[in-house]
Image (cartoon, rainbow, N blue to C red; front, top):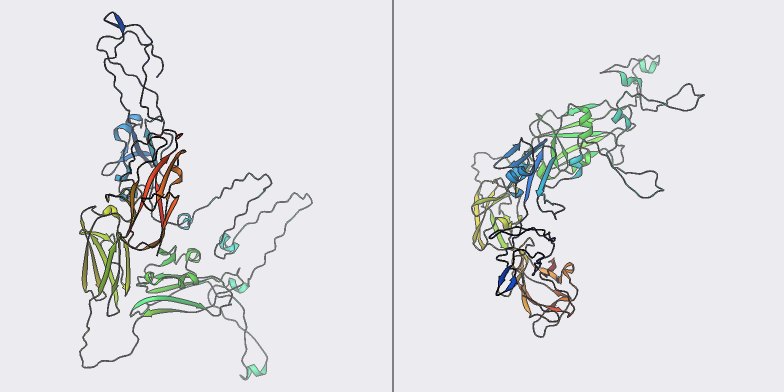
Length: 585
């Protein structure tokens, strides 16, 4: 606080002084009286009296608004636009304190670019950070059908050009330019009066004939005229560009396991062949890209040629994405600019279905169904088990936590899958009631619709390699948050503290090996050493601790103390953290 130029104070007057912002906390403040006004005489001595002194901490304010589609807005049971001019008072009146209250469904309503506008009255704050969680995606999905610009920076004065290697599907310049193109020619040769362009292409005048045509010949060969020898016409050409659509549905008596397409020979030249699939008898068509089905207009041959499935893509589609396949369409390219053509040998469906021709007459058939069974283990907030059906049929399941839908999120059963089926599911601690009894219910169903269920009851707790004090209280949570600290109180320089016992418990749900414990180096302080030991008496300090196999629910104990140097600098809020790593068995 700067030197005051205040005048005489009135009796009972209260004044406020703002101290400069400090990054440190202080135990003592000094008041210097620089004026001789307003003193009192007590027993003949001049005395200055401070009647009352009060310190108040100023709490900073932080507010957030959303800027989207040229408008500022905030969320309150829905998005509310701010039509007025946005200033400091707007942030204070309607700004949001916590963005986590906004549901995912609300964020999906915002189209285009979204800006997070942050306001604070803290003069020491220079930046703000936000954690944003999104669904997994690839750059190929984000950049599809978009123009991409790559900007390179280098401080190499000798570099004159940049090289970028891009791997794409095969194409020719005619795929990009079409059949009609203008070529512009420039030269600074003053003697040049004309330009020539030579184009080499696989082309025949017969390519210009539309539809079917007849070839008429004449001969005076008596052998041919007498019918003793046939006249042969040989014509080497590419097939016409054609779109072939399967006219009828594929007759399926089971589930499609795989679609296999093969070429005539492995070494045959590759032209352009593209395929599409239909799941509704040809009403709509789809192509498989980025591990999912996307809509495709097969009548647009340019689009079909660009985005249709090639042979390798079709052969690699997993079984789960072939359910309900009914038809396949093909596109063959007859471009006269290609020297190669595609030779397709066959396309076959591998179907998991009985093919024995058994005929029954005058007899009844009874199907005996055995209900599916399940074995479950719940440990470390992880649910594992095996869902099996003695009939070797397919099975499906769903999981409920405390009576509410947990997996799948929509409440439906999973897709039917071949048995035995392994279940591995992590239970999010944020959905668990801590310290209370929770109920985990697994409902399962076989191919014929027989439903059964199993329930597991457990007390809500954390999962992971968890630190605990000697009283059994957790020191941190699953996500690394601090729940409780080992408090050593005031430590005098040159002394060594008492020893505290810490326990690490395996709540992962599986065994671990090669457990490694050490102090986090970024919290080290000169003259202060955090020491570890396997035992309390005698305490044998070591930089790190290693342990072998630890089974689920097992624990190990170790000991911690703090040793200080006489010259260690004072630190009113010193702290340290530990790290643990391990390998899954």
